[in-house]
Image (cartoon, rainbow, N blue to C red; front, side):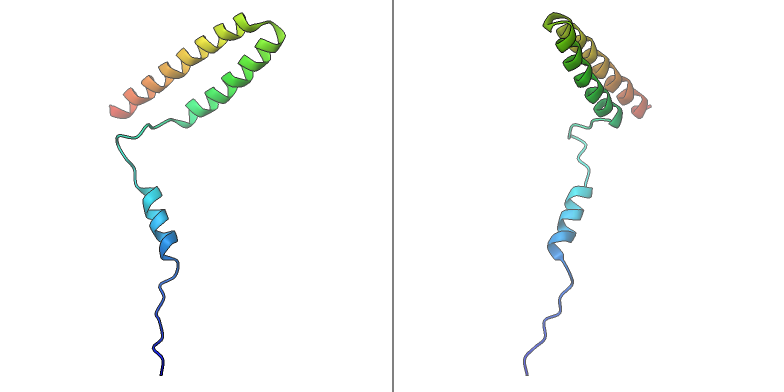
Length: 81
């Protein structure tokens, strides 16, 4: 008689789940608010650049990037306390 193989299911899928569930403390971590602010900033820059001009769009981009950076710094400090 032939031996029956005992399978344990999808081993490769289980390995991927374990791989993606692991957190690395050295990895860049972006908050969900930073992603939302970046999307809003992108829409604003494109629309303002189309309506007014590149110079004003560049100013809006610079201010938005500063706001996102300050938001990330603030969230990091609140997480460590």
